[in-house]
Length: 138
Image (cartoon, rainbow, N blue to C red):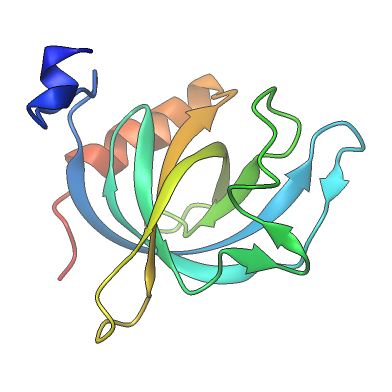
């Protein structure tokens, strides 16, 4: 057993930065190149160049469970729509669901969903770097 995992120590390669970014997301079919579901809302609460924590009230979207229907070969990622920076255009990211937990009952979103970003373009990486450097919104 990995001693870092056993001790509960951080295993991420990239530092997570606090965030408060409202997003919409849906399940994407990468083979058919079309959405599998409609969009639902959530919030990114921390982010890195490799992944993020998404809070949402939806682990089941139109019959697709975010973890159980998650294809590890990358054929069913989530597509997140992030708001524009300043006066720029909104942008998207693809991510695989790695884990999820139920959060505290009294908060706006009841589930925490761990994401790992996939197939990042240079432009998406630049957006992520800017987001990681910006101060977290209250």
